[in-house]
Length: 44
Ligand SMILES: [Zn+2]
Image 1: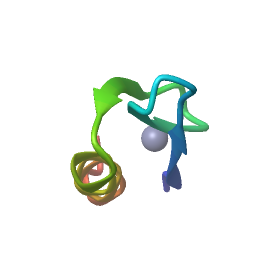
Image 2: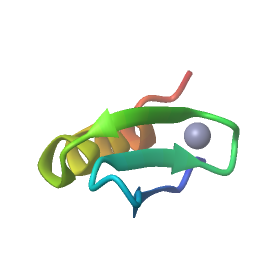
Image 3: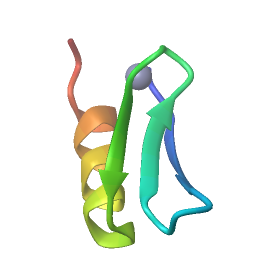
């Protein structure tokens, strides 16, 4: 099971990432939270 989290970058974009290697850059805080939650809920 994945546990995704978010990280605010120095340029104020938000990165969503997971220990499994999944990562998405350039989010806002809202969209990063949504992406992280979506990733956690996918069982692929
Ligand atoms: Zn993951």
